[in-house]
Image (cartoon, rainbow over all chains, first blue to last red; front, side, top):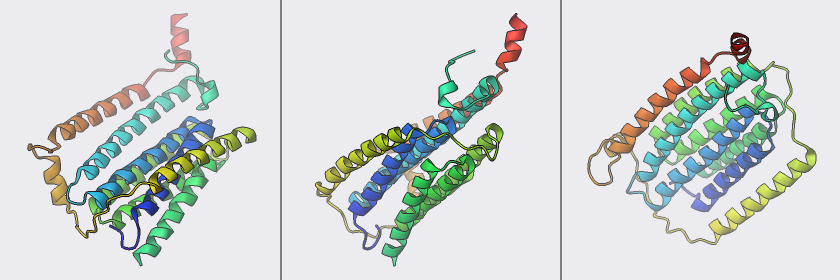
Length: 105
Length: 174
């Protein structure tokens, strides 16, 4: 654990990060920007897993394993989402949310 | 000393996260996200999970950010500015976010956490043994599943990104 830092301060930082992500997710109008906001939200939750593991249950490692799985799933999700965005850009020449109305071609 | 470093990291993370969701230039916004991710890996270093910090740096700062920059370069003109949401909408969403943050913080601060004082260092060896153990509480099945998932996602991404253009398809069918 971090000397002199209580768990409350770290959880405050991650909560702020999470809600910045939520704000970006709702206000952005561009698919790539929305993807970046999702990254922020996922990262905040990963820090929560790790911090709670370290501060409350230091003798087990479950939080670390779960954060590794979250990072792997997030990487897979980002790769797929970018593939979809690039395919969409070839078809409608735009990555704005308002132009995205087709599900398949 | 660690206290000061933590506060600096927290400040960097929050400021660059706000800059990342409010910047008008796409590429700058990606670079601000890079600083946020590097700050988060700094937090992992501070609480002594070196392996996780290395994963964060390689997967996020090395992989995801490069992927995002590539897609931004393919899709946007460099000087193009993003259109922002209406001011009223931004204020409304900001208020909702702050309300949610308030709910979170009151819940967190009203809960008594049973913090265990410790200075245990986790080595990569422990994580490896935990991930590959067959015993009760071992993570061998999710570990194998996640490798299959990554393979499937990779193949799926290639197939989706290769798709044909809509205009060509229309010409073929007509």
